[in-house]
Length: 53
Image (cartoon, rainbow, N blue to C red; front, top):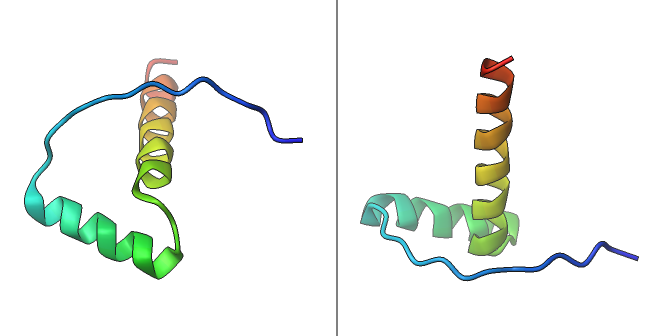
């Protein structure tokens, strides 16, 4: 059974072109924008965690 996690709402702005590219990628990969953003944030956190070691 998948782990259930608590979600929270955030509101932000990004460049329009970047959002368009994300939407295209999401359609190509059949992936929701939220899922892609969570993946990107996790990768960013991992990158900076490794840099601080």
